Amino acid sequence: MFLKISLYISLIIFLLSLIYKISTWFRYKIGIGSADISTSTRFFSAVKGILSTFFSAKILILLKIFVLDVLLQFRILREDYLRWLMHIFIYGGFVLLILMHALDKTITVAIWKDYYSTINPFMFLRDLFGAVVIVGVIIAIYRRFILKVPRLFSNAMDIYTIILVAVIMLSGIFLEATKMVAYSDYKRMADEYSGLSDPGELKSLEAYWVKEFGVVSPNLKGPFDEALLQKGKELHQSSCESCHARPQWAFAGYGAAKIISPIGVGIDRAHLPSVLWYIHILACFVGLAYLPFSKMFHIFASSVSLLANGVIGKEKLAPANRATLQAMELDACTHCGTCSLRCSVIMAFEEIANTNIFPSEKIASIKALASGKELSPAELRHILEGVYLCSNCYRCTVVCPAGINLQDLWFNVREILLQKGYPEFLVLSPLSFYRGLMKEETVPKDYEKPLILAREAIEAQCDLMKKDKVLPLTPTNRELQSGLNLSAQAQTFSVCFGCQTCSTVCPVVGNYENPQEALGLLPHQIMHAAGLGIRDLAFGSNMLWDCLTCYQCQEQCPQGVHVTDVLYELKNLAVKRVREKTLQPMERK
Ligand code: SF4
Ligand code: SF4
Ligand code: SF4
Ligand code: SF4
Image (cartoon, rainbow, N blue to C red; front, side, top):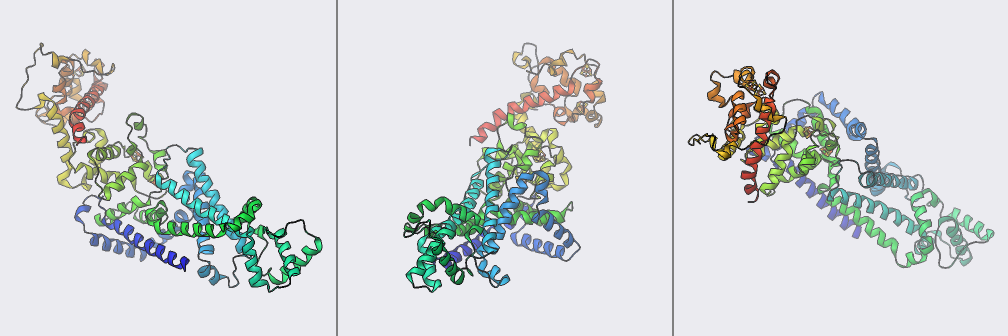
């Protein structure tokens, strides 16, 4: 009764949680333009997409991905052999245990009519699958805590999952072991099934089970007389053998039984088999009920992600499906760290201790963002910094074993955060190149917005940029003449003799009929301003921010002035100053 009620409760919780989790795929809004798409539109668009895939030639691609990437997990194998082994052991062993052991009354009995859990091959297979899962868990612990795979972070969910699997497996093995040694269990079986009543015969059978089956009897202890054992063996063969294989076949439970046998009588008296049974069953039911909210949900979500991204390929997705796919991908992440291991901008973490730089860690923050959780301005800025300190190199997407299109995800999140109105200075840098390439994907009215905001923030801090304010540029103005704090390399501007070659060769300057009007100062004038120490004047020039970093000017300069490097450092100085003045008060809000 307890078993049935617990099972039904956990099944109901599991199903409701599953429905809730899947509904978030249609509700979370992280795709560009997803805010305007209703949940029902997304749902029906997904159903339409799935049906059109099933009834097309793409079904063959789906089958191929299902076998190679979902079942055999080749994507993981390509990246890390040990991780693949761990994954296959845990997931393969667990699935087989569920089918053959947990659902034995439904599945195993339907396939093998004479199934009985204490005969072979079932007894051996159950322990074999259990041992396989335990080896997988040991590899997981070894990789995380001993081998310390670089950039593999352990969060609470990872540890919870390892502990839950370990509790289920260990309680199962020790349950089997305690049942082997428990005298009361043996006694109950002998009374119920042997049909013996003669004390001499019962003693022979008991002696045989003590010697051969590991039962710890409070009445009998070996060594036993050969004749007694022979008699016991005959009785065993006639009454018990058809239902009980030798316990050594259950090698994991038998090994554990040997270890605990010195305290076997105490274990039985303390009803430890019952206690372990409750622990084992409850751990299984808790695992089932909590599965949709645990890391184990990735078994389902990453399979869907692999299949979906496999058939979508490079096709342009309808906005409704793109939003749904990205919300689903957040659940597909296994927190394996492969993307962080391959990420090309990780060295930035040495300078900026923001864990959102790691793609594997960004996902968790983005999940919180997508769920609508209230995030502080500082948290939002950290996410934005994380997604912007990304060179769009695509490496994370290529290696992700869950098939998540990470690059697309970062792009979407950037746009959403930029729309929140923070002046993002990185849009002024070459890092924003990818954004330019994706211009058509962005909401037209929002494309220029972050750029304008960033320039306004700089303007607010640079007096010489203010159109209504003209500062006197006199040699006595000490503040303006203070040094630029540039590196030794960039300080080469001091030898500039104003030949204008840099401005003549500059493709940005050449792009305008009236460059002065569009760009403010031209490269040679910025060098001159730098030479005069008029920092604000240099900062205020649009040329500084429109520079393509093509290095033409630097290569052509007859004086060896590091023109592009000077521009670079001026930009960094401007952003640093404005960030200090503008963003910190905002983050303290
Ligand atoms: S995004 Fe992919 S590669 Fe990165 S941690 Fe998640 S599953 Fe692993
Ligand atoms: S696309 Fe960005 S997050 Fe992904 S590996 Fe490249 S730099 Fe790292
Ligand atoms: S080319 Fe060199 S020397 Fe000539 S103006 Fe530019 S920085 Fe100065
Ligand atoms: S590096 Fe910048 S300033 Fe120099 S030529 Fe190229 S675009 Fe012009």
